[in-house]
Amino acid sequence: MRIITGSARGTRLESMDGIVTRPTAGVVKEAVFSMIQFEIEGRQVLDLFAGSGQLSFEALSRGAAKATMLDTEPEAVKVIKSNAQKTKLFEKCVILGTDWKAFVRGAAGKNKYDIIFIDPPYASGIVGDVIERLCKADMIADNGVIICESDSPEEYGYEGLIMRRHSKYGRVYITLLDKKASESDEE
Image 1 (cartoon, rainbow, N blue to C red):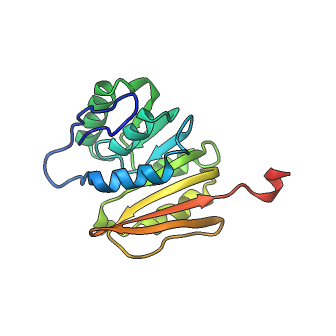
Image 2: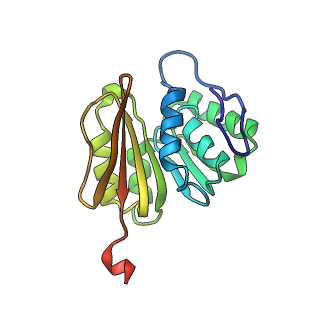
């Protein structure tokens, strides 16, 4: 697992041993970042199921301003911190060992993010619930994008979000949802 491009290009990232986390495959990561390549610079990133943090570190390497990464596994949090040091991106990271629901409750109405990665354990089946809670908590910035990874062919969505893309890569499905600026904000 390496950073593809940007300031940390080529940096080999650590990952956890075992089956607790499932790193995003390289071909999937490359596809995702080609889809959002012009939307990263200066953006706020939220990675709710960070694992090794590879998606956030790729975004930071490509110019994102800050990334908030969560994972409930203490070993994953250690790996994320180690990867933050290796990539020399530590100062742009907020690394939390907390549950996504607790984070959303605490950050509701306070923080908004431009790029949100939702990549929970496939068996959890919670992607739709996560999207709904993020929308209700008003945590998606206008013109923000949500990137979902799952093994389900379901096309996720929620009121106020527009499906940009739903693609299959092997057994993995990637869904991109856009939040457009409200008309009152555009006036």
